[in-house]
Amino acid sequence: MNVELATQAQALDQCLVTRGIFLLEIAEQAATLVDHHQQTAAGVMILLVHLEMLGQVVDAGGEQRHLDFRGAEPPSHVVVNVTYTEPGVQGDTATRTLKNATIETGAEIKVPLFVNTGDNIKVKTTTGEYVERVK
Image (cartoon, rainbow, N blue to C red):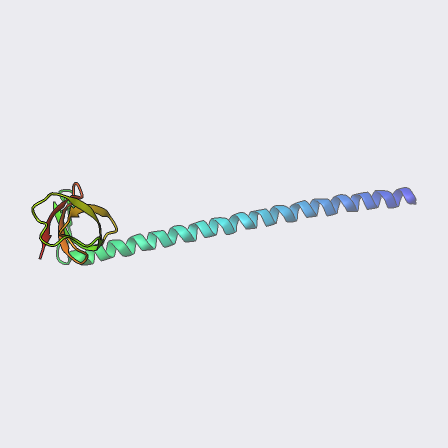
């Protein structure tokens, strides 16, 4: 009788181990499906954002449905505001001495001594160099 009980206990243990392994595999598959679902949801969100952006570009085009940006080039100059520079020297327009200035984009460029904080200046887009002060 002890041998029978031991055999039954061993069979029951094997059955429990098999079921435990089976349940672990199910949990693993569920975790994989959740991860796949999250990745798919993120991909769908990215696609929706791209479609929204595309719709805005088409709306911005109005009647021009066939937009062609292949020949588009940035402007040669832009007008920006000087957000910070050290105070300039009054009347110093003859020398070519330069000082640092921070413009509204956050970039730091060299400007003549007479340029002050709040001035609008023209900057060459290809080199980032000061061109002239704009009134």
